[in-house]
Length: 216
Image (cartoon, rainbow, N blue to C red; front, top):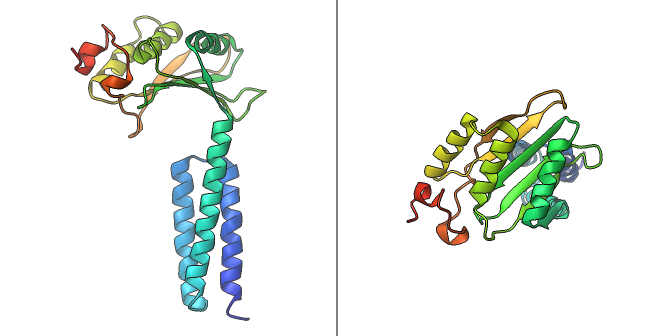
């Protein structure tokens, strides 16, 4: 067997693997972990069984494939993203509330001060629908709490839990779901290290949340 066969086959296998992982729908962290382990194992095989030039060549091929699919994934995400105003935002929330189910909705205040709204997995858009409400005159945290009250009730303990996290500097991601029209909505807060409260200059004044967040 010629010595160039290992790098060629390994490079081709890695290029296909990036495509398979991207189309599988797994999260970014899982994808990075899987591909990192795969790269390490295959580069070790090439280093042991292939020619001296095999490792750098395969590494370059892997890097090119990673950049290509990362750009493609970002393009796909932007294609699913739409910027909306407050009236359309509330209209989208009403569509979710009136859906027959199963339905899941996510709402989160981003570090930029924008509000992210995601409605998952309906028949027309199985990949999910993503929207952004850009920073404006309305308090973004009040909008999130509005959804907690409307979907889960005005006295749901998730409201207090959400404010506790805000006071600690964490902007949690609210997820509400129900299996069908006959079932009640349930909610939980997701934590991610990147979900941070936006700085004061990125959010409008609010008599409710300014004292909580330390702005006089």
